[in-house]
Length: 640
Image 1: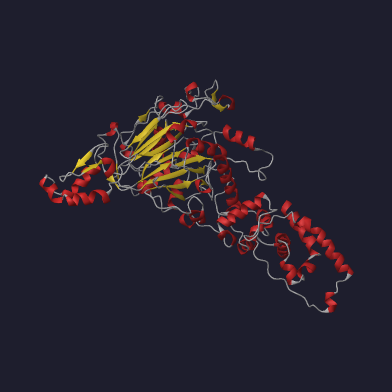
Image 2: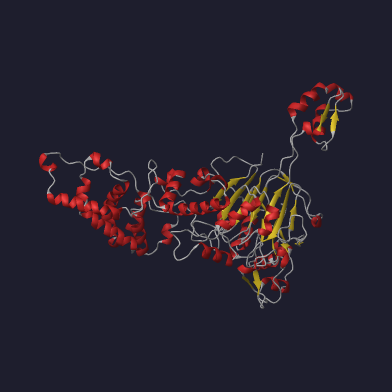
C-alpha cells in the first residue's frame, strides 16, 4: 500500500508538471539532474500502474515479462492477483530498471511560443518547489556519475552493478558455470585450475527453496589416490587405486535434486559422506541420495563410507529397512561417539539443554553429554532398538565407533578431537561445535608432498657420468635421479667422477598440503581452532545478519543473541573466527530462508552487504570473502 500511494502521489504531482518538463529545450534537458530524469520516466510508466486492478492474471504476468521484472521462481510465489499487482507496483519503476531517457520532443521557437505566459511561469515555479519531494525517490548512480548524495542502499547497488554489469541489461538466471558470479566475483575472477576444488551444492538453512538448496558441500580430490583401509578393516577390502574421490559434507533435504542439476558432482564418484549433526536440513537427503547413487553403483566398487554423530547407524538402518530400499550402494556407517555440548548449553533437570550466554567457558571446565534423563532423545533410544545389520540391504561389516581424544596435540579450549580418517595422503579430524544438539566440525588436511627434483641441476651430472654409472652397477643410469630424489634429508650422493650432490641442493623443499575447515552449525567454533589453524579455506555458517535500514524493530545486539540462542552465527562471528585461525579464504553459508540466492539485484545487494560485514570484521579483502551461492565452484590451489 505504501508503494501504491507513493506512485499515485508522484503521478498526480507530475500530471500538471509534465507538459512543462517535456518541452524543455534540448540543452536544458541534458543539464537536468538524474533525479529529474528518473521522475520523468516514472511519469511515463505511471499510467500503466493505475490500471493494474482491471487486468487479468495472465495479462499481469505478461507485463512482468515485458518489463524484465521476472525472477527465477517468481511466478510460483506470486499466486494471488493482489500479490502480483503489489509486486508490479513496487518494482515497475524501480531504479534498477531505468535505462537512458529518450530524447524529449522540442517545440517551435517562434516568438509566440517562446513567450511564456504568467500562468505557465507560475506553474513552472510550483513544479520547481516539488523537486525536493522527488529527491526522496531512490536513484542509483550511473557508472559515469559519482555516488555523492546517494543512500547507502543505492551505493551498494551501484557496486553490484559495477561488479556485474549484465544485471543492467538482462535477467540473469544461469546456474553453475553460467552464473555471472562464477566468473566475476572477486574471489573467482582470477581463479586457476586445481586438483582440489569445492562445490556448494546447497547453501540454505532450515528448508530448501527455489533459489537455495539446504546444506551440502562437495570436496573433490582430483588426483589418483590410493584407498587405505583402517587398521580395523584391513581384512575387509583390498587396497585399490581409484582416479578421483568426491566427499560430501552434510546431505540436506533435496540434495539428490541439486546434484542432478550440476555436472560437477557425479553420484557414482561420491565415496565418503560426513554429517555434522542430526538436524533434518543436514541429513534428510541421505536416504534419497543413496538410492540415486545405487542406480549406477558397481558390485565391485568400494563401499560408501558414511560418518556422523552417534545414532546415525540405527537411524539410517531404520530408514532403509522401512522403505525397503535395496537399491542403495554397499555402505557402512562410522559413528562419532561421546560428542559433548559446549558449556554455554546448560543442562536442565530433564536432561534437555538451553543456551546460557553467561556461561561461555572452556570445554575442559564442563564435559556434558546427552544422557538417560532425556528419555525422548534418539541418542538414548537408538541403543534400545534391536535391528541387526543386513547384507540384504547392502550394509556391510566394518563400521567403526570413533571415540574422542581429550589430550590430543591439536586440541583447543580443552575440547576433544576425533581422528576420523587417515589415508596415505589425506587426514580428517573433527571437533565439537556449539549447537543445541551434538554437532561437529571437520578439518580435511592434505599431507605435505615431497619436493620436486631439480632436473636442471641433476640431469647434466647424470649424463656426464652415464657410462661410469653403468660400470658402478646401474643398469639404467638415469634411475640415479630417482635415488637422489628419495635421499633422506641431510644426506648426499657421490657420482663416480667425484661430484657430490646433497639432498638440499637436488630437491626442492616439501610442498605444504592444503587444509579445508568445514564448520557445522555453531555459535562458536573455538574447539576447532587448533585443527583449523592456517586453513586454506574456512567454510563457516552465517545464518542471520543485521542489515540496518532493512531490518526493522531490532538491532545488532538482538540479532546476534537470537542467532547464538539457536546455535547459529552472524557474519561477524564467522569473520572473527577466520581471523583467529588465520584462514586464507572465508566462505559463508547456511543462510536464513529470507536471503534468496538468485541473481536479482535486490538479493545480490543483500548478499554484498553480508560479505561487507564479514570483510570489515576480519580485515580481509574482497577476494578473500564470499557469501556462497548454490553451485558455486571454488578451486583450491596449492600454496606456493
